[in-house]
Length: 282
Ligand code: AMP
Ligand code: ZN
Ligand code: FE
Ligand code: FE
Image (cartoon, rainbow, N blue to C red):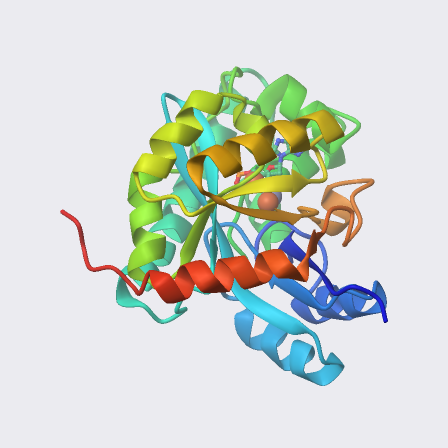
């Protein structure tokens, strides 16, 4: 018998992935995974379809999300697992973020126009479909219009934090999103710490109620995995991991590109049992 493994970081068309929840679940099943979490940006709208598909193929589905926050003008992504999708504080946050993301894209397209890059706002919204809209949809429009030849190039030239068209994804601090996840009964985990690359902040977030660290990620080298495992052990954080699969909007990253043994899913569950939903701190 093979050891059960999990991929706890996957995106669908409900944010900036290119595959439906049913397709992601089916692919994960074909890869031999026992457990997955769909962690779309600022939304849990994939959950009904993903739940139905997971029951059909017989794979465990952990309710998940990836929330945007901002610390010192840097983007911070916090994953939430096992949240109650109808928690009022969470539902309100997701609605606010959805609206903010629309405004943010309008602002980014305005700023691109100011530097001579002409994009059709309707085209960007069409690319976003029904899900939460984000920079990859702007990046795809830049490719379609011939301004760049790939999505990474769009970020390097126009959409990354150092560029004039950049607008932060959320006005909330990591402490605030950690709090929302915990109020919804969820387990907050810092995503892909290498993108942040400021290890002292992990100590700060741990003191603010963070439960886990995404030690295993498709962008982490073995040396980085070892470094984050040490940090997680020192701070008593649960280690999680996943591929950060986005389908065709992230070339070269397949479902299961980064996985964890099921034992670590048990650790997440144990943390949740020991930390029932908190009420508002403020
Ligand atoms: P947003 O949530 O709108 O800020 O967009 C964040 C998403 O953009 C990430 O989850 C990735 O899917 C994508 N992304 C961020 N940086 C890059 C990059 N340098 N190249 C390609 N995609 C990127
Ligand atoms: Zn994304
Ligand atoms: Fe992320
Ligand atoms: Fe992600």
